[in-house]
Length: 236
Picture 1: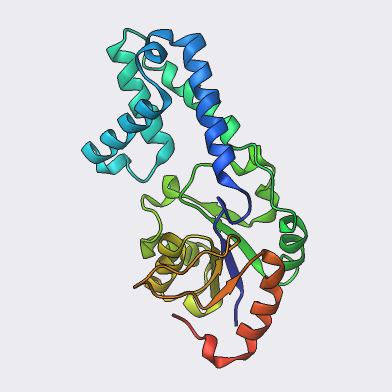
Picture 2 (picture 1 turned 30 degrees about the vertical axis):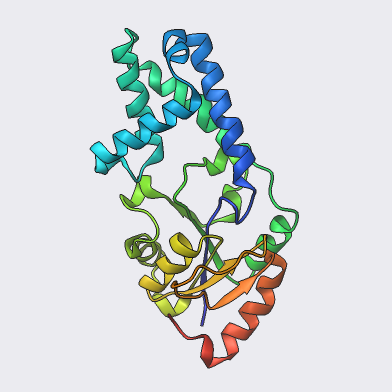
């Protein structure tokens, strides 16, 4: 019997591409105003490359995008003669813009309806501030790499949600848009999964399929009814 539904956020509840692009530009504009020597020396793409390089050099930062972003900017501040503490304010500008999201049209109604019968939790690899985004009220709690020290598809991300909620794999369902991070991660944790495929993408060759596929969250109610009654939808 499913009791707990965990939701991915980016590209599951909102379109993340425009949000991330806008947030990157907001942070860069902040750098132009407050750390101009860094902005003059690096494009947005070069700053992204710096973060990827730092993640390779310091794997402990790789899963926590907020700390990675702060550490990369602090290093640049030191290199260009600025106070490294300014990196916190720069990343705050990014996080504020990162957390200004526009939900897909059906999300509010579906989550409100599901909350009457299920416990809802968000399980994300990202760093959206759900309070700033205005969506924290949908969820009992939220887990991200900042709390778990790992990220999807590592099964420990899913296990952390089960431990905190006090349920086992048979009582949990994960809903997300990423075949690797969301669906494979759920399989590794022996949890049932639903793939949100809004763009009618082809399933990647060689990956284990989700237990169900939907084009929007409107279809989730029907999937849940079938999963609650049909044995073929057992745990992964």
